[in-house]
Length: 82
Image (cartoon, rainbow, N blue to C red; front, side, top):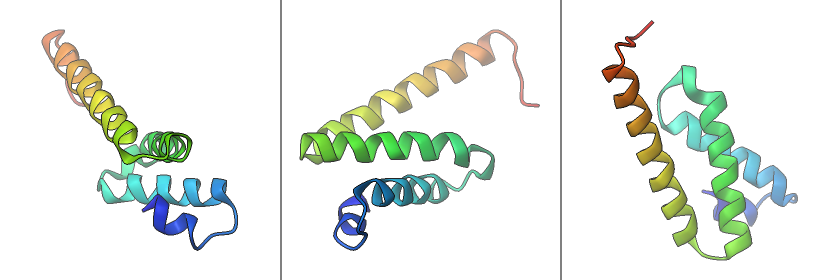
């Protein structure tokens, strides 16, 4: 998404922000849109700086692994949904 927006939006940062928001919205979790927008923005920056999609894919995988570990740690500690 970022690459497509980058070719159509004047500002690279604007394209990164828009792709971050798109990343968040496509996850379908309204309560997480602010946090996922930030990670989406970070992934666009990783892609822009590296010139390759692979570092962003690896970063996304590491982020997901961390979030799954945090979820199971919280569940094991007895933390339930609000």
